[in-house]
Length: 202
Image (tube, rainbow, N blue to C red; front, side, top):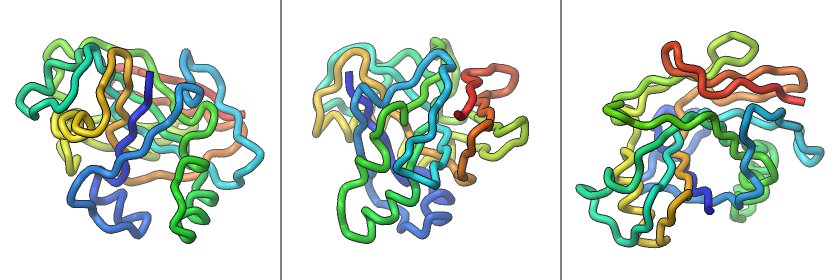
């Protein structure tokens, strides 16, 4: 199982970090050791003093595919959830300034939180609102209609470079509003009345 993540997929988020809006998907990966499930607590690592939350819609691949055409991409996933791509922003900034890869800042243990998966069952993931609350205050709010590259386009693009396998996860990018977390924070990801995750930062 691999975790594929899309960076800068919402224009407002790219701009808030001072990045150019990309003309094709920005891809990075996380190992399976990055996964954090079942509302287990997230422990702030000792190598960063600026860990940021990034809520994202996550889809799960349910059959193998390679070089998938965009019009067939919807056949390769049937479940989704909300998740958090934790980022060591201070470390990322240092790595970017040196032209180095982001993995140390993005792919560390338990940096990929996933909530409970739901069947899509008619849910329009091209127009899906979602929210992150920190200590019951809304800190991020997004809608997938604002993605630069929608889920089917992402799957098609990624599959030309990596064979997708059953169980692979794709984090589809975060909207604006990312910010730091602290010990004792509670993060809740929801859409409407549906709560996908609810966990504590320690």
